[in-house]
Length: 198
Image (cartoon, rainbow, N blue to C red):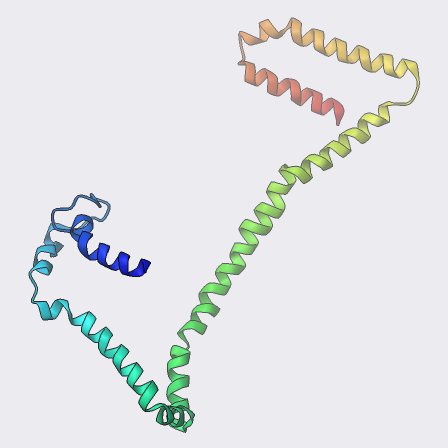
């Protein structure tokens, strides 16, 4: 039922979408003025316009006729030597599909596995993303836990170093802001912290 509605609405509204004066598509499909033959297509003879429909109906009629009236003949033709040769010839399509698969599809699949998947997804993104974060946090936590010796003077020394770095950063912040931007200072501050932890 829906197909009938789409066929009739398409026939009735075709001039609205692809007609001569329609601006529906705008300039999305560019056609050179010397190739613009829409007006000539409108004024073709009716028989030329109906040729695809006539061939489609003739093919459908021939298929029904051959399947219902000559079905035994078609089975014998298909199982004969000539029928098998014709079938294998048209089925293999001169091995274009196999050549296309071997020389284009398989290398593209292999290349798309190596570069985007294995190198980027499983390699670079995972090392920067969750897996790399977990590995780095484990390494940092092991190094930080090595500072925990249980001796008071070790804890005092670590606290004093942290306070000293923080005070120096605050004290020289205004002086450094005159020469560097805030982003550069943040970068170097966290770089120093990273060097100290590693």
